[in-house]
Image (cartoon, rainbow, N blue to C red; front, top):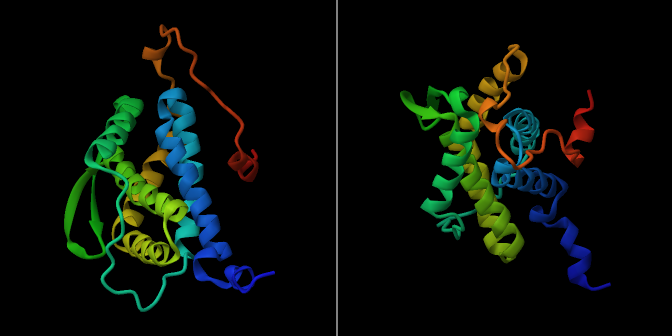
Length: 203
């Protein structure tokens, strides 16, 4: 066994906390990218589950020290962001809402944001990091980890909580999430495909 193989598990970016975060983050990105193939009810339920786990994993995600001049590669462009934003807004339909929120960096000033915008912002950061984790070198991944954790603390963490709150109300407020407009479509939407994450949330 080489020294590299021996030392690899001890590196921060290969720690259990980081690997588990990347796994959940990737699941979130896949969920948003495939939202056109599932029903609104399934989308809300599954996203609620994933974000609940993601919040926990982001809280315990380690933040590298002694990082300066972070300039990580971005894989998501403006068109990608709008694709997710428009897709989520269309999927939520009449249940799309705008809400005021505050960010840690500017607690005195509120911003008005929609659920689709919040999810697209979360997606952008997580997609960039998961892609970097897959393709980047260790130095770039370490910088990306710092940026992702910092952005969670300052930006997308607040957005995640807002989405969780609104989706919680949709799921447990005796609301009919059936997409009436989808009933006449010829394609069959997936209502409840079993995924590994469901094993964690058995009813």
